[in-house]
Image (cartoon, rainbow, N blue to C red):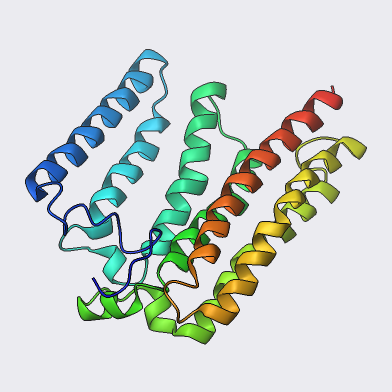
Length: 239
């Protein structure tokens, strides 16, 4: 391993021989099966037929992410798959289980979160560019190059904030002044600003970029938690 970055290149437990590949695959399949069984329980116990479609999307994309012949992560669409699965698919699934229906609000709420989790994967691909290129993993960051990839990262982060502001002023989640409570998500801005600043300067340095990787993770976490609190507070005040 030429460079060590705790946020890129995976956990290296396989390359270090800490876990056998066969054991790794067995654990992964076990988790997938258990998760699928839990999903099937909800489908039949709560009569939620459309949950099967969301679960199917999750299972298929999980395999197709690196499994042959699809290997989507190697074809420059892995970032999109992660953004969709950890954004709209998971959010709509959780909402459907609780409300037994679909609505536009949870879909809209999931988009900024999906963008930010995609940003986590995106910035983690910068230190991996040489290694990914060596094994034919043509991520979008590798395909676009440093300059364009930095712009895309900034675009994803900025769009997440634009959307949360837009939702507040359009009163998407609660009426009147109570809709502004969702703007507490803006308190996560320092993480975004720091990550962008570090990335623009240290995008080629796998060690110096580590704080940007970490701040992007904290950005996704804090933005999501604060947005949820804001939505809940607005709904409570709007009753």
